[in-house]
Length: 210
Image (cartoon, rainbow, N blue to C red; front, top):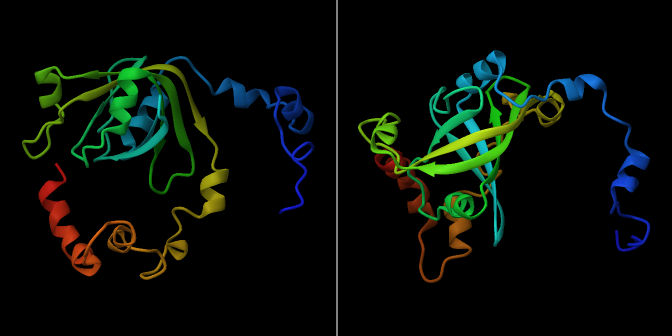
């Protein structure tokens, strides 16, 4: 790919994009709403997994969030609530939100080809009763992310279908992907036993997941 001509081999304007992409069909525009419809609410409440995208002075961040279906609570037609569960305390997403409230959410449901997208603005809530209402195994999140919806729409099945994401025959096999221990060993200083890390992690996760 060294022979690419930077003057002609990139798209750098809206006009350049419009020259090679067709206009969207009307139904692709009709599915976008400024509120959470009843059917969009059903999708959110069935989803056990959402990707949270945020932006801050240091750049962009994208964080996976998961819990039993219904963990993202639809408060009304414009707001959803997302508990911030225990993690690694990097709090990249939270640091971004307090400085730039713009967020995006991508909801996924295992076995379902469609995804659901929300673009909006977020704030962090620490009301005691609210946090306690999201407790699991007696452990409440330290804060709850409240997202006000600007736009919401579903995405068609093409990406999930092409990736074979839910197809068991396409799942990775042991040894095909580096383990967390192997990746850590390549980066940490000093001695590190990656085999012990990988072996002991399931027990650690069971103790610290909430």
